Length: 142
Image: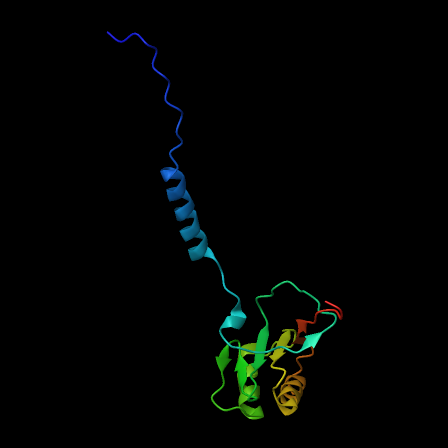
């Protein structure tokens, strides 16, 4: 007969359920993450020292100019990249409204003529709320 006291077994923490929960959270966050719209079309924005951050507005016209000078209106490339096609497209989207804001994102290597064309077309259509998107430049010395 063995009457010696038994040594208690040290407590163990089973981390298998914890790993399962962390893995499920990782999958949830990967699936529910939203991605930036600029990943669809690679545009190298010019930089500016002051950039205003505005709230997203649902009713607006976004015009993107790629390095070749091609126009994209609301992330859709135009069939032909001339002023008449751009004007017809904007007229169709605006539907007679002149209060719609127009946001222009032009690549820094895009031809200046493309930007002037956008400004000319929006001016002819009476769209006066024109803004140009730029990336914020890093301060000197950083």
